[in-house]
Length: 187
View (tube, rainbow, N blue to C red):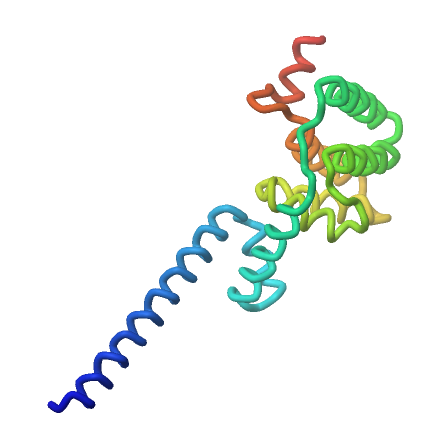
């Protein structure tokens, strides 16, 4: 084998190694995003019809949210939100639909207080999916139920439960107990 042929073989092998490394890194990132975003990743793959497209969308979300000033709530604000949440839940008995509407509004206010932009629902859900991927599916489900005119009381109850999971994630302090546990001590 002459030197020119050897050089071509070496360059071809190097190119193959580079392609394999790039592919492996992309696969690893995709697996990490899939594990991190869970059901939201699967939802995007289904709606977009393409894993690579879903991966790009999630990467864009991560970059967008990095630029935001997302911050924890101060203790006083957290307690005010928790108090208001209890009032919304208490209202459910007499006015389930109104309570669900109030829950949605309260979540929007909590998101805004944390530094999330609150333009439209899809953008809010996309932004919150970066820090709270396990509950964003609940947020979407609750929002869908709340928009249905034919939702019965049981559907509205499910919406409240779904809203509560996101609310807890938004207002929780590091190592904070869940709202239900705090409510039990106040009874």
